[in-house]
Image 1: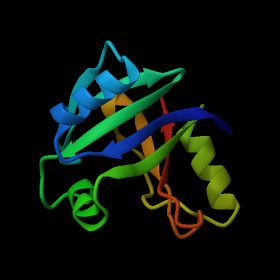
Image 2: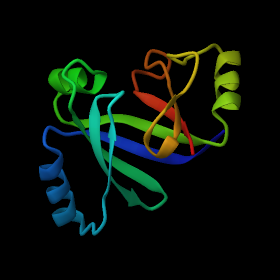
Image 3: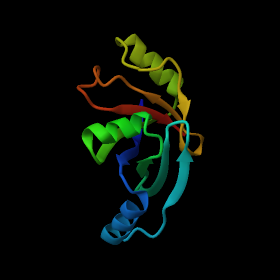
Image 4: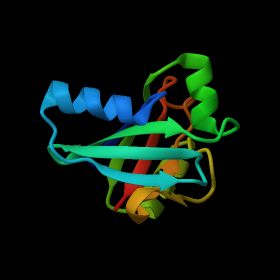
Amino acid sequence: MITKVHHINILVRDLQLAVSRYQAAFAIEHFEYGDLPERGVKTARFRAGESWIVLLEPIDAEGVPARHLAEHGEGLFLLSLGVDSIDKSRSHIDSSGGGVIDASERLGLEGWKVLDLDPNTFSGAVLQLTED
């Protein structure tokens, strides 16, 4: 079911400062930028092998990422696991006792289909599934 670590989201207070630090520390030459207004964030991402590292700066104080940043500070926000099919994965999770937050997926960057999983089911880990 899981094919890879699709992306890791890291919350930051200042996106440009974070990009500068990651560029300097890891010699990253290229970032891709995007906005997700429905999630209240602007993003910068880079490849780490076949996975993405996504830096998120909240732009909506009422959004989930902004509330998480206010409560927990900067750092790891969520781990997204790549799957071939969100629908098949949701069905499998449901048949094993559940563990999804929403009944349907939503769209992420680049049109990725994402499905948030219930942290209570997964030992407190904030996980989501992503289908390219």
